[in-house]
Structures are given as structure tokens and as C-alpha cells.
Image 1 (spheres, helix red, strand yellow):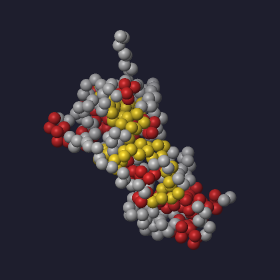
Image 2: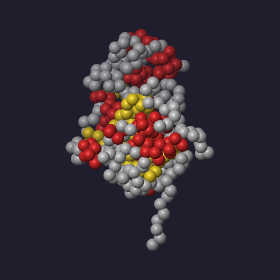
Image 3: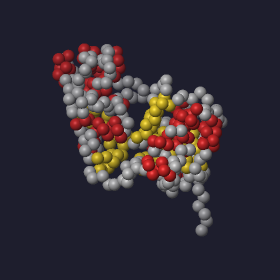
Length: 351
């Protein structure tokens, strides 16, 4: 029987295959769900866990080995997301996906079965940086590959600042194999089947998200903690302030009072889903023009409630607006601007 030839590893500039990975909870995650944002994908053998916090300690050593790089003062890796706190700049947040099955279908399709590998994938689904090694990668080898990625190449432009920082994270993870003592110290507790856990698919802003969650998880916590949609704010967590207002099948809902499982099969819209094609929703634009906010914490919930208020036909007068927006509290007292914004947006929707 002829030998089966393995594909070569994907090269920089190549489109990535539409593979399905399994997250830390065993939920299947299609790579296409992350199209539209850059992400970091790691492949590693079963005996190596790159997600432990202590393995990020050498990150800035890798960054300092490159010219003109910013210093990262904080790194958080939690539930499939990595957040960098950059000194003198804004934080950078991106998905960090891993595949520990050396013989998985995804590893074979990326051409890295049985090997350590890292891929930085851009918003269009193409490889922007990669490193593949048959054994534990050496720091100098990975740094050299990272430096080479900063130079313009025939296949495309050099890495953006965000892509470079993501690549540096990958480089630090690839070169940070823990010692046996550290591995024993940081070994996670054995996973058990959590009672009450269930698989849930939520359609949020037009995209399906497959989650495995405790049956008691609120829609608010699922949006913020599992999907990284932080526009929906947690205020009182008791349904009294309206900061967590979202739309479920066109109806405004306090996400803190609704179980995520209850929203399965519904169409959920958050503040991130209001704008279309880079153009603000009319209510968002009206809030800006009329100073409908001060600190801004309650603003996403105010806007989501205002959109529904107009759609429900409850914006006929200022008194009516105040009555039907009374579930949304603004502790800064920007109610005058909020009412003016709703009146303006309502008038625009009827002309």
C-alpha cells in the first residue's frame, strides 16, 4: 500500500482551511467563527501545555530582542482569549486557540501533524506569521523567524503592530517548555463532567456561537465571559439598572435576568451588532450629537433600550420616553441629552 504523503505546512499568505477545533470545555469551534478579526492558533503535542501563566514570563525578553517594540506590562489568558496591556498604549485583545491533538484533522490540514507550530491569522483568514518545529523550538530560532517577519516580503507587507505582538506571544509560548517541577506545580486539576453543564448555541449579531456552559449561566455572563462582548455592561446584576440591555428576537431584555440557555434558538443583538458596514446606527449617532452620556458606562444599555423604545412606538413625547426608558438608570444624570437623542432619531426614522 503506498504511503500517504502529508501536506506541507501552510505558508505565509496562504488562506487557512475551515477546520473545527475543540475548546477547553470540549465544545467544537469552527475557525470561520473568528473571521473578521486576527487570531493566534497553536498546535502542540500532548505533553506540552502553552496556556499556563508562568510560561508567559519570557514574553518581554522576546519582544526586547526586536527593534522598536513596545513593552507589555500585563498578559491575561482566559477562556480562549489573550489580552495584552501595552505600556504607553491601548490594550490588545485577540482569540488564542489551541489544538493539543497531534493527530487531529486540523493539524493534518495545516500540515503540522505531530509538530509544535504557531500561526498568526489575519482578519481575512490568511497566514501572516508562522513557526513550525519538529521538536521543542529553540529561542534563537524562533526570534530569528520573528525578526524576519518584520521585513517586507514578496508575498505581502510586513507585520502590523498588532500582528507582531501576537507573533511575539506565540514565540514566547513556543520557547517556554516548563521544567518537570513547574509542570507538576501548575498542572490543572483533573477535569470532571460538571453536573448541569450543557451545550448551547447562541446566535449573536448574526453569528452562531457554540458554548458548553453551566445551565445557570446568565446571558450577560455568556456574552461577556465566554464571547468577549464587553459592550454589554454588568451594573447591578439584579435587573434594576438596565446597563445590560440587549435585544432578543427584537425585544429588549435585561441580559442579567435571562439564562443563556433560554436564548438558544433566538436572534440576539448586542451594542456591537448595531452598526452596519462601519456606519453608526441612527440612535448611536444621535447620542453623540446630543451628548446623551457622560461617563458612558450605561450608554450601551441606554442605546439598546432607545432603539427598542422607538420601534415599539413609545417615543411620541418626552414624557412617554421618560416612562418607557425608566428601566435604564444614568447615574451621571444625562437624561436630557438621552431624551433629545431619542426624539431626533425617532424624527429621522419617520421622514
